[in-house]
Structures are given as structure tokens and as C-alpha cells.
Image 1 (cartoon, rainbow, N blue to C red):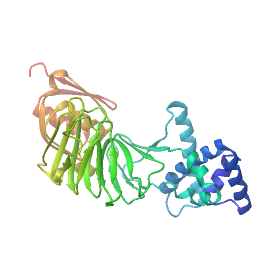
Image 2 (cartoon, rainbow, N blue to C red):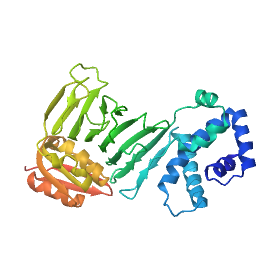
Image 3 (tube, rainbow, N blue to C red):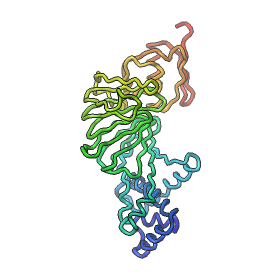
Image 4 (tube, rainbow, N blue to C red):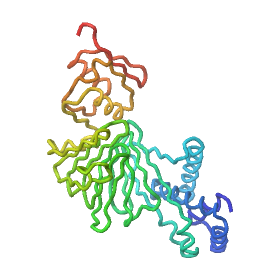
Length: 336
């Protein structure tokens, strides 16, 4: 049994007699079964990204391309990364369903014992945004420079994923199965809720803005955090290093997810933090003079070029702007 046989099975191009031989091979070869489980997860994502009118053969080509990319990535990083283009893809991630027909033929208890949980890692690069609709109906809008890790056993009854970055969630309501978002420092448990969560690894503050529903915090070594609920119209701030947690009223709810429309809103924000947002929005690297890092700004950036943005800031606080490719250098004017 080779890779071609797995692809033939997944694309429904295998005869009944070949299917029986395939099932028998899975029973006898643990490594083949392990590889099959990996590839069926990749196949689920690949076929969901293809257009509905594509043929099975085209789906197979797409799968082969992504499989080869996965194997190349594993040699260097041992993980699978998908780069999704800005708003070009509304991906419906479908796991587990492809194993249904196999489970009927295989010994179910043996399969369950040996099945491992694998993660599909979706990465949205700087300068881009993307959207996902999960099998339970939850819709996620993902901001730039963000990673989502979704386990292969994600289902309507097992709703958990990992986030590193920023995303806006519209969680499908299910009172019996909470939806859990895990970050490196804190977990969020929801039932049916719309909220924005920002938890970039290189930022100290985890910010959660609730629009609708209810959120419960957990997973932090802080009794003031664990079990705390957030109400609509409130924003929670959790400082990773100090463990300080505070909740306050959201000043402008409509600005909470303005990044989805390409707008960066900020109020009294230090330049070094604002620069991080600009870097993600425009896929650039900004170097700021130490004397300018804590200059504060209030306003919004709306579909302007990065050069226009930096020149506008230079008017408010005179500084020099130098650029080379994607790199921007900000230096203080000597006479300012």
C-alpha cells in the first residue's frame, strides 16, 4: 500500500475489492494507519479549500500539493502550517467525517486505542486576514500574524482550539458543550458568544472584548481571574507577567473589531505598541528610536498606505522616516 492508495480512497476512486484490501492493510500495518489518519486530516482541509465545481482529480492534485508542502515543512519544523490569503478563503474545516466508512469496517475499539490527535495549524501572515467556519457552525475571523491550532478530534461535542494572535469569534450556541479557546496564559470558555480576543505572544496584555453572550475565564494562576465572567459591553485585560486582571466598560463597542474592515483604532497608545499593529497590518518591519517609543497617539488608520500613515505621525511628532524595502526606520529630529 502506497500513498497513491490512500489518495484513491480519500477521493472515492477505489473499487470495492480494493477497499477491502485497503481495510485489511490498515488492520495489519500500524504505520500505514498512522499515516492514513494524518493524511485524512490534511485531505479534509484541502478539499474544503477547493471550489465546489472542482473534480475529484483536481482535489487530489490540491491534496498532493499540500501533502508535499507538509512533508517539506516537517523536515524543518515538524509541524503543518497553512498560509491563507486575505479574505480569499472562507474555509469550512471538516475533520473525522472521512473516517466514518473506515470505522464500520475496522475494529472500532482497536482504532480508538491507536488513533492519535493531530493538529492542523492555520497561520495567517502579516498583511492578511482570513475566515474559518468550524464543523459546529462557529465562525472565526482571523487577524494578521495569527496562528490557530485545531485538533483532529474537534467536533460538536469536543469544541477546543488554541489561539496565538487575534481573532473574532461568533460561537455557535450549545449549552451542553462549551467552546474553549486556549492561549499561552489564559483560557476562555463560552457557550454562544461574539467576542474579540487578542493574545499575541510578543505582547504582555491579553485583551478580550465581549459583544454578545457570556465569557468565563480560566486557566490562570490567579483566583481573581478563574471563574470570572465577562458581560456584553465589557473589556477584560490580563497582564501575563504580573497576573493583574481588570474589567472595564468598553468605550466604543463598534471599534472592538474594526480591524476586520482594515481599520486600526487606538487611544493614548504608545508608539511602540502602535507600531506592532502597523507591522501586522502592512507586513513591514518598523525600527523606532528609543526616545520616541513612548509617544502616545489617539485616532484611527483607515485604508491608508503605510507611507502616508508614518508621514501623518511625523507631522504630529516630528521625526525622520527612512525606508528600505519592507523596513522602516524612525529617528528623532535633532532640533525637536
